[in-house]
Length: 508
Ligand SMILES: Nc1ncnc2c1ncn2[C@@H]1O[C@H](COP(=O)(O)OP(=O)(O)OP(=O)(O)O)[C@@H](O)[C@H]1O
Ligand SMILES: [Mg+2]
Image (cartoon, rainbow, N blue to C red):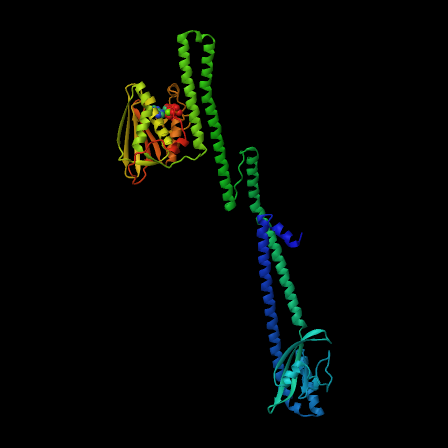
């Protein structure tokens, strides 16, 4: 595996590595760039300074010796030599003076003196200066094995170049300084890199620990369903926020799990009662009741009631679980509200007649249409109407008043003159399995699921259902549903194909 591939793998092993690697690369590259720029700037500035001072020195010397340069005498040569030595020692530089042909007249260098009389016009700077230009060259001298900076200035008299003064300096000092600077820069880069790594690792651990805790808790829930633990929330940042949401999720799951268990316990309990009753009736029949025709009929009738009740309960449980599982409820039927009410009344009418309860419908709907699922909506209305009839005694009244509230909403008010509901029970009657008057509700075959189903269905239709009641006087249930705006007043048959797909039974 190549190095690049290894780095690549390491980098993507964790979020922290990716961050660390990115920071490190950015920091090292930018520091390197800044350092290189600084080194070049320092070097060029130092060299420029040096060159300027060498040039000034050459000019000073030229002023001193330009008279002697033209004269070819021993005396003038000595004067030149002594001036050269003086300037050279003062500045610690090497100075060479050549005549107009490039022959050495004087040289200060003790390291590699150019012998008098030797022609050095081949050296580039001398050559240039003899041509009248101030020449600047950097060259590696083999004799000293070091870089030298040379400035060569022509000395002129009467428009003629009479000679050249060359001032040279060894660049070792500048180079050493640059070397030192380079090392300091590299040390800074290394230290910054190490600091970046340490800070990143520390940060990564800080971020990682709560994330790991969360993933461990999640794994525990996934493996064994154990939701007893939440994760500690200690931080004010995004990771803390995540932990808070995570804990909220766990609490919600716990609540759902509690509701689920409660539901199963309730459902089993509700199923057990009629099942046991059926068992007793069958036992009684076997024990001889079947011989007596009167008794047999009585027992068979109660068997029929019990089985009906069982079937109703199972249907309710099935409906609730369908609604809970969010199974697609087609909401695409156009439902004429008047038709909906008529059909619901038609369903509860036999029971009402049996109980001698009168049902009155008073509606002003102007052909209002709601969008939804007609089977479900009818089920919801029948549940409320059925209750109104069930919990109202002989010669009572059930009234339905349906009106359009503005153009957007239809209001269906179902009022009865029944037993009413205690204020204490009122907020709970929409809960699953809740029955205000257990004895009476059970006697009428109720399981306490009807209103829960109703509320769920109405909510799916973006509607609402509310209740007001007074014990001994009666109850009023109000259903509100959004109306399809500017609906054409179409009369539709209630059972469309889509409705038949989603069969929901009715237990009235
Ligand atoms: N119109 C009403 N008058 C008086 N009490 C009512 C009325 N409607 C509902 N209730 C009370 O609210 C409770 C819950 O009603 P819900 O329809 O959910 O259950 P149920 O009628 O007992 O059983 P089922 O699931 O068979 O409908 C009832 O048990 C009853 O005590
Ligand atoms: Mg009911």
